[in-house]
Image (cartoon, rainbow, N blue to C red; front, side, top):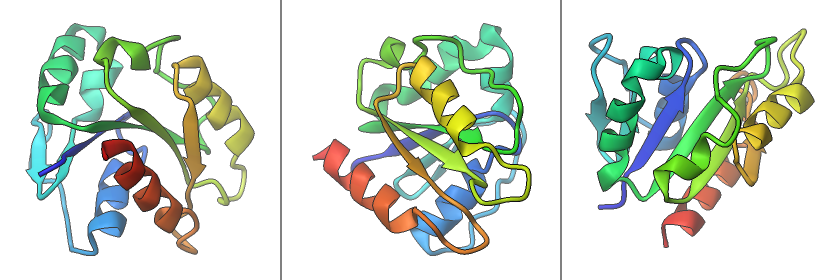
Length: 144
């Protein structure tokens, strides 16, 4: 089974994306633990927020076909360092969450992801379901 690993800051929308893509009621159970939910792998936000845990992200990605870097459009900052994506040596898709929320800046969020080395970016919004079909197609395309 092809797996997809989600990386992003705490509260960036990783769990919501997994719920939307799986069509099931996913709820993360433990902080600071990598969680497997079917073909989806949810990583703790702390693994991105503290560079001491980058090795855990790299190790966890070993069995994944595609990585998904998640950036919240309402956040004025990003913790993805420049050229972060290439260290994983596998396809990486960027996702901008909450792109239609009041005060969101999806262009800025996309720039953060592109700076991190992401080439393909999709904008999503949980309130109206924007972008989830495109994201599912992108993940399937990248894992083929």
